Length: 490
Image (cartoon, helix red, strand yellow):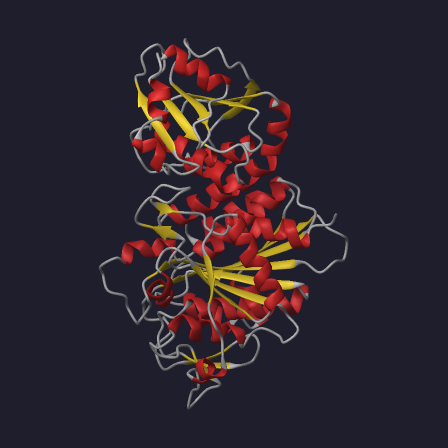
């Protein structure tokens, strides 16, 4: 797995600035108030920091921004980063500042003079999130990243606060690694093997093979992968950190390791991006890793359906009718609407086996959600206002975009079939909603449920606040926060 940025916490010495090599960061409030380290830097640079504070660029900067002075006179450092943060900064502002510092420092060593900063752990979290690169398949070794040292008046306290955040950062990195892997590497078997390795963290991991799935009646999931040489699988991960016997929260992920569209073949342009069609399963995996690493006091199960959607002589065809594990029949109109066929069986199995307190499924499900929400927000659908509001609150606190979209009978009516209980698509209008309505048919009335369509946020073409372009790891932070706030024992 991609290594986290090495971060160390040390005692704060505001005067030891002149001889520090690499990069140095100091903190200034939006009003221009300098702490001891900033005043020391200003003195050594013969007033350069004060001149920056008086400049127009400083006046326009917002909390969390970083302004860099390159090769500052009077310092041995290559760069002096001025971090703009109020004394009562929010966690998000501190994380954004950390992410800006990670981007600005590149691979150089960095000393952050944090002083009494209350949110120094969040700043370190931002550094860890943004300090990511996926280099597994580059033959030229990348430059080693220098150490980050955060000088603080209470280093032991801040380091303790950082430990659970570091666990979440590792979960985010795992998700990004999985989403970034090419399909010839991350086969269904390799994916299952990587999840099985998490037994070492205390997770219980079970792999259901094709024979198991056939005996369970998961015909809609199996039909998606029947055109591929790669075996379809379902992996069940269990974290039992809460009260014995308490109903778990269930996380369910779509894991299509490559999606050609099947017989309803996708256009060639952009098909290479379909290595990320297992993004929902990647988020479930990363979340389970984070929960295990931080020893969450909750019961959570994570289930992922792993398949590959390929065209061949054995592939499912448009017009075929398949019977789901629930017993409902589905007319296949478009074999490229395969994710919902994977999820519906896993969702039913999850409810039958675990009787969960709630179910949240994640999938790179529709292009329609990108048309509606772009790359800023995941689409959120739910049958339970309380659970939905709790998730939206968690996503807002973690600075991950999420927007609730409607459900309704009119959308459900678009799924009517002349020859089966339902079609697997409802036409172009409201495509993300009709996909959610399809899944809702496999949710029991008593089960609180959220569907997250992450097609627009799982992998993007430009840098985001907390990640370089590519896989984002969206959702791990929000789900971890939801578990912490709503499902953990006191």
